Image: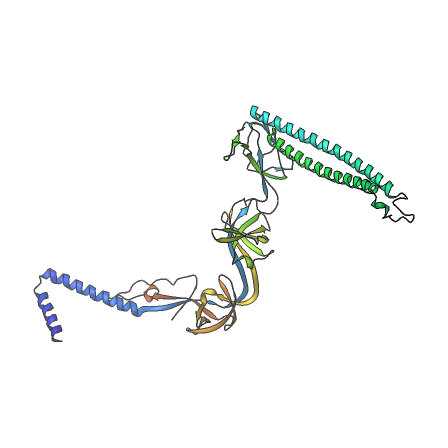
Length: 436
């Protein structure tokens, strides 16, 4: 105690030895230090707890599986050509409706394109001749089959190989003559069936030759019926040869797309945890980055249960068909999807953020008469944001969802230690605030 007194005496002696201006500076520093200590103590005393609350309400619980994906390019086809030269005539423009086989453009072929077109025409004519020969051979084998059948039938129904009652004479039918006639008929039938397959194969080859000829033709045709999109050609445009980067063979040049009226499909990938929750026919909501103000609906139409594995992660592709289309929806647009897997009506719901876990029990803080009490509840199903309460709460109970520590000075006027009043703050808006 004496040492403390001596210390203060030395401080006072030191203070009186200071000059006038130093005394003023020291005094100001001392007052400032006292004010800082006082304000810290006052802040600690004035801190209060605020609660963000909401009511427990009955409603519909919607459980969904979220995923991201893109619009699949399944309702459009690319219009291509291997012809090169100058566009001489356009029969359609971007946005036109066309039918399968309709002309889209005419090209004045260059020399290389003419040669290629002549080669593909020759291949087509050769394939057509091959088919005609196969058909002629089919008629011959059919005739031989019927001749062999007639010979066998006449032999099999005579008195040597058939009894008087019309039953087969099994003893005589073991003779070589009978087997030779029977085998000739069976061989003729086999040749006829084989020739039928040959005719089918020649038809396939003829179709392929025709498509190859069309690709080099001076006329570009619509492959399917639909709306022309992305057609940038104009009369006088030059189509130059393009080659595949992997080899020197000429590849097809893309001209446009033809889009059908089929509803757009959205392709998403689900994890092995989410895919068991999803079933064919589940409804879904879809939003697009391109126009986030619109929400579309759809249904799951395909689930690939085999999956694809990449870098140790397995994904399962899922397709969702939109209920209604929109011309603004384009292939490869980014989407955000919620697949609704379960709904439950007229259940008591609270925000999931209001739940706390303690000793294996789910706890909810309830505010009643400005007092907070903790209540154990039994929970049911839960979505990303809401949880079903089976027991422990009643509809209308005020539930605490968030606790906030706030200075009184942020809401009320605060008196300065040197007199006067500060300006009071505004109460935060947007949610119900209770103070304690």
